[in-house]
Length: 331
Image (cartoon, rainbow, N blue to C red; front, side, top):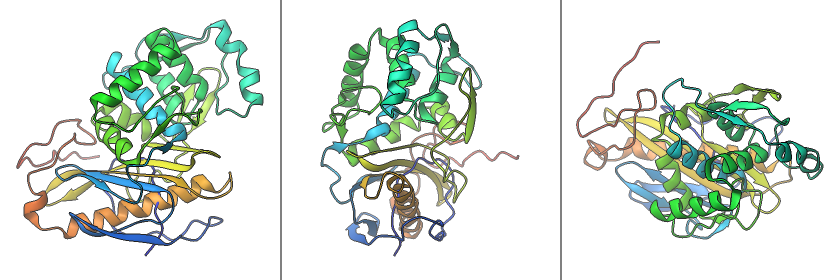
């Protein structure tokens, strides 16, 4: 068995294992556990859970234990912004102006070691650019700017995050900031899987987390921390890491199963390692977990999955209904 990582992906998963990355830790032990798909090899470290459309949430080790989630919290931030200010395909959205106080805070935030993008007073970003800065380089300051723009203040926005969490059935989640920088922002792997399932039904959010890079005013080219994009179908969701949370990844994948696109979402938090190793360790762990789930899903009996897929198609954004064949698109 191999180790497991949790990153964000939405795509058809190739059911093959990849070798350990050069310069990263070797795979850690896994914890086999029986469930609706049979025995799944879960990461032995940290907490983990998964969700499959038509089946539900699959609890892994510690799935219901609240833990710090670091920048994975930004998935909820993006989800609320897009709920309140929807974007069409390719639409840039309204302009967001950086306030003088937000620009003035940047040097001190940089000295604190926060994850940031450079900003200047009066800078204008489109909503889409702000979301790209939030989700690719995981900019804490963009989370705070978006919170102010959406709700008037970080406190008001954080209240919306908790209200939305309750609405989504995330009963063991408590947000205290829009960025995840605070260790008092806690959630469970199972709750973040529920959010991941909802987030991947938003086509614009799914498109943004699949980007390798983007161009932001002032900051220029920003790159996605999810270095596994393009490997075994991985195309998104969100990474996070700090000393309180360890390495954290939330991953989504679409697998072709019994003629249907089936959504897989996996979460693993608290992966160990030094500051430089914990995120690569988490990414490797999530990758292997998605592959394990894909193999189990492929081997499941047809009556458990046929005609029960949910979510939206990764390219068209259309809901998949019972017996509907996915739209095939060339190119």
